[in-house]
Length: 193
Image (tube, rainbow, N blue to C red):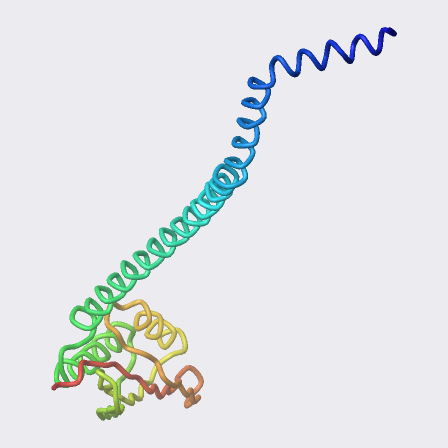
């Protein structure tokens, strides 16, 4: 007999003698393969999907937190604006028509005397705007004096704490050093309920 034939015979005897163990190992391999295909692989895919969803959930949560912070900042800003608006309404603006008229009349009279201007003709009229919580007080004043005094008056009016707006201004030369300035001014107060 040849060496290859001897090897085949020995292999056949070993396989035959150990057929139960080899059958058991083959069966276990087959069970392992089926378990992997039916249970382990699908579960590993589910785990990957859960990890992906978890990552997406983290991104969604982070975006929601940023949106929450932005909304909170807007609300804080809105509250700040409301406080500032209330301060403007109740501390800066005159409280009613009489207070607005006195503010315009007395403040303008005081400024004209302080800046050496002659104040002539004053006219006041309330101006209501539909749908507004404010009513305006429009006034027209004629002042006479030098150019420098008029500049000083306008400067003092602009830097004063009172809320008086210059809506219009016209300047006329009357004499060599004398000018006449016509000012259209306005201030506002809360419209009574």
